[in-house]
Length: 198
Image (cartoon, rainbow, N blue to C red; front, side, top):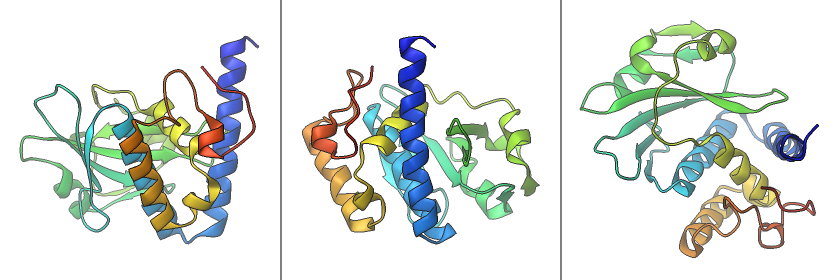
């Protein structure tokens, strides 16, 4: 295994541990709310303006840097993915790209499927089948950013909504020192003793 693959595997393993801890400590609804917040933070680390909507549809509204459009995102964390007419109606139209984002977890490679809502219908869809559909072009790649956010955040902040919000605000104010392309400063994040990743 080359160095980059080993580093990626180590990052994925840390994320799996964090997500397992979260899933085992909260209700499914709270798990979904926290994951929604973490995905929003991942978009923010990539320079996007993000509006979080804790109740209602869409869950997130994302404006990629330099783009002249918005992305309306409905976040899903279960398998099968259950889509209502309200979910799909809430992210389509209004000149925005409507996307359903489904977290592939539990899995040895946690990741997101971002599917254009126009390719989906109300009902249940198996996560594997959903991930085989054409993926939406978001103009930003948040897959690794999501892993870095989950890895960098102290576990105590994952389990406390106010602490999570405060951590995100602090990171945003400081320019995301814990989550950068150069690596994660775990002395700031307090998440682990692993060496920095590239």
